[in-house]
Length: 253
Ligand code: ADP
Ligand code: MG
Image 1 (cartoon, rainbow, N blue to C red):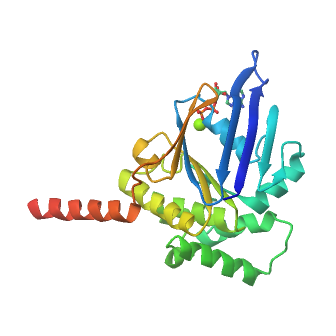
Image 2 (cartoon, protein in one colour):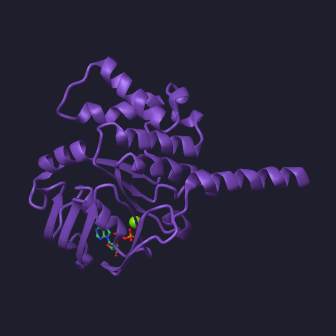
Image 3 (tube, helix red, strand yellow):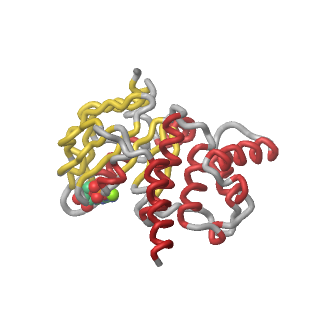
């Protein structure tokens, strides 16, 4: 399999404060197309910094980054914005949806920022197909506050899909969700991954990382562990168990 993400000896030093902070200290990593990676590690270990570098939101102080075969380490802001638009989708802990805007319009937004101009009909159709992919075709005209947390995160995932990215980057996507809803969201990621989308996500929950194929651990800016998940959790099976347990609890009430 070819690597969609290849970083070599990458470093990030923040020079904004009084003392420089060496947040990422020489990470080398390859991620193949179709992989599903969890990045773990204590708070302050450099996970978000690494994700910002992988997401072309920030540039490395040192080191090389090949994204889908293109060297992006030396690109300027505008070039990075183009690459992000073409190749990457983002999902955040806090959903980041526009409040007075329907689910469908939220999903359409990234298409408005790209180079290509789409007709409103094309926008509509593509947004609807992404919403259907995450199981929200029926909720397209709802506002975010008319949706549950899990549904809002699924809208955010649909928005990340709209430009047909190679890679989805998610920083603690289940951080604001209860455990059952987290499993549902992991189910959506597993389904997308089956369709060939590469997923890289930060999580500090071990049982969430077990839905991924591969687990990385960061410590003090370094990659200290990189293992394949031996027995992956399957979200559809776990949900079934949760539903059965709920039904059993109701019977004994
Ligand atoms: P994590 O996501 O694992 O909690 P971060 O990547 O956010 O870790 O942070 C790694 C280190 O870099 C921390 O010491 C943090 O304080 C520092 N840091 C993060 N962002 C900045 C920034 N914009 N400016 C200065 N220091 C930063
Ligand atoms: Mg973080």
